[in-house]
Amino acid sequence: MAASTSYETFIGLEIHIQLLTETKIFCGCKSKFGDKPNSNVCPVCLGYPGVLPALNEHAVELSYKVCRAMNCDLAKEGMFERKNYFYPDLTKNYQISQFEKPFGRNGYFEYESGGGIKRIRFHEIHLEEDAGKMIHQGGRSFCDYNRAGTCLLEIVTEPEFKEPQEAEDFLQAFRRTVRHLGVCDGNMEEGSLRCDANISINTPGAGLGVKTEVKNLNSSRFVKKALQYERRRQEKVLKSGGKIIQETRLWDEDKSVTESMRTKEEAHDYRYFPEPDLPPFRPDQAFFDMIEKSQIELPLARKQRLTEDYGLTPDQADYIVEEKAAADYFEAVVALGADAKTAAKWIMGNVAKELNRIDLSKADLGTEKCALSAERLTKLLGMLADNKIHGKIAAQTLAAIFNEDKDPEVIVKEQGWDSSADEGDLEKIVQQILDENPRVVEQIRGGDQKPRGFVVGKVMKATQGTANPQSVQSIIGKLIG
Image 1 (cartoon, helix red, strand yellow):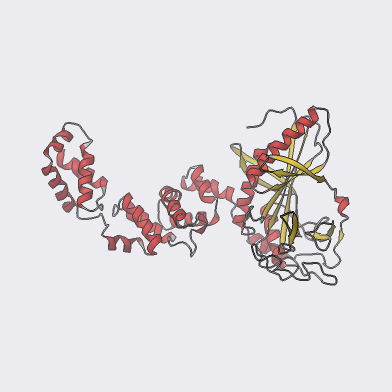
Image 2 (cartoon, rainbow, N blue to C red):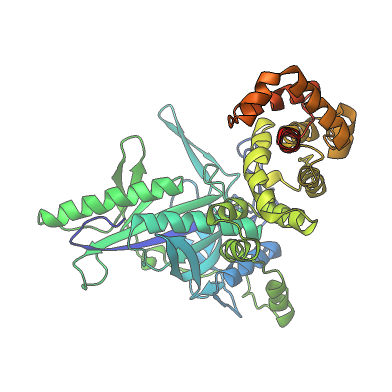
């Protein structure tokens, strides 16, 4: 719900995603989070004099893949520039980035927010090298240059978000999409997806106000909270007769406030000029054809298809498409013959519970980590549908699949859990229990249905839990009338 305000809000996001490449953008050093500080460095990413960069072509391919998925105009010529600024995490004192000719411009992305579909436009998408990471401990500052030179894609939206909630919803949908594309793991805690937010307010119809940039936003929730605070702060300044200054502010989650960091630089402050050691990138038609073939069904479109084609609820479809692996797994199970709605309920319920028990997630479905292959879940649901096992036994069989890495038929046979025993044998057991409990028979015939549960319980005990409760109920009705 929109906040009550007499000002119009303009919000834009600058998102940085670390691309999933084995090596850095201009050298052969490993691009890996969590290694010993300054162990993945070389003269190139440390900016030694006389070294030359060599462009990582896979990073370019992933960049164009994102640009195409975001409906951008794809550059037929991309150029790199030097962005000059001084900071300890940048050993060269300049960053190789893109300015005049980025790989993508004028794109858009559709996402769900406020019960409907919204569209945000992109100003540009460009490739650049990441900086090192500053670490502040005990009153001293250290720098880990393992991150310096990793492949970083920056996505700049137009300032078209009107509410902080829209920005949060967009960021969650965008993160899901780049994970589906396989270009970024989207881990905001580790910094592989980072977001800065720009916000300005003004009187309605007056256009953009003076913006502030907010940094240190380590989750989509922080983005929303920081923007809500910053809008209130700017409103308070303007209502008191003050002026907003263009600056960069840091979000302090502990205090739930933004604090001034520095005045905001303009593009001319960075003194961009062409990178002399890298020629322009001019892809041929074969490259564009490859990018086109690499496109996949995006999460929003897939969610809509799952609700329309399989009859899933929006919540079910949303849960399943959150991870591409889970969506692929679900459709594989259905393709093998399982009922779609039943499969969705099991994936969201019993399967999710078992995955959590063994420290896996739905992102592991269909991988070697997970013993529950699509074939095994299909067989299990088939046995349940054919009344060979009932719900409780199905849940126990599911747990055994994860524990023992065996097919469900094998587990059911070994445990003697098959409830598809001869109907006559089951009827004899029910008849014996009824004969031993004539008062129960009288109560049921008199219209009291509660004693039926007593009979079912006795039968389950006699069959060691393998009898199908529905079949038992049917037999009770047949014998008593």
